[in-house]
Length: 171
Image (cartoon, rainbow, N blue to C red):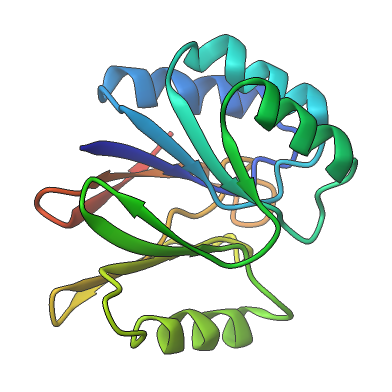
């Protein structure tokens, strides 16, 4: 399965629209949002652009109206987790999370979770920094930020669950 992995959209609708266009061009069958969506209007925009493509998400530290974000995800038949969660996609098991505290602490937690038995990969956000590593048949992936506010670059990742491989795309 081809999965789009995105994070830290921070209500930047222009960059979100670019990200969605690229995800559709890449033929994604599912999208994972790793947190800091921020506002419900961004979720509505995601639905408008993605149509029937499913979304799995996790709350970030800056997400605002969590009640309405959850309500919209439920209404669209999407899944939104409150914190780090183990998800199964196409026979693969991933831990998805946003992040905590600073960059180093978040990366340290993600690396530790990668050692969890039966996990094929850890996907995380929060740091706004792209990171992709593949080691011992497992992947560690941060797609960077959609918003481009911190790094000045907007990026997404495309994950191939069959090959257990990913690539980063700058928008």
